[in-house]
Amino acid sequence: MKRADLLHTVMLRARDAAARERIDCELRGAEVAAPGEFVLTAWGTPAEVTRLAEALGRQDSLREPKVIEEVGEENQKLRASPDAGRRRHLHIAVTMP
Image (tube, rainbow, N blue to C red; front, side, top):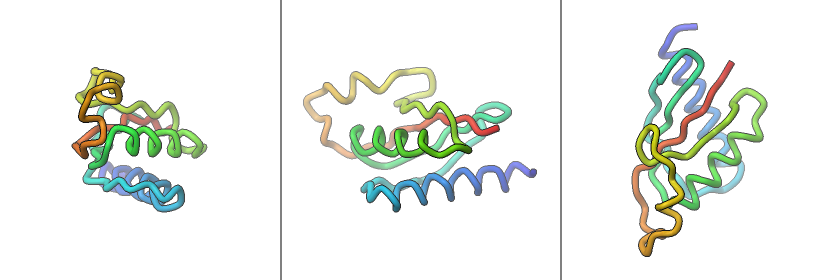
C-alpha cells in the first residue's frame, strides 16, 4: 500500500472514531513515524484527545494509541495543568499492522 493510502486510511478511521463517539476534536493531519507507526495531529482539549485515543484503541486495526504533546513527551502534565480545558494541537501515536 502506498504511503498516501496508508495516511488516508488512518485519518478515516480516526475521523470515524471521533464521529461515532461524538468527540469534539478536529483531526488535522497524519504522518508516518516508522513502518506501521503513525502520528495523528488533533485539535482539542487534552481530555478530548485522550478520549479519541481510547476510542482508537478499541479498533482492531489501530493498536497502542498514546497521546503525546510532542513526539516522545507524555501528555499527563497537560491534563493536570490549570489551563487543561484549553484547546491545542496534540498528537496521537498509533500503530497499525
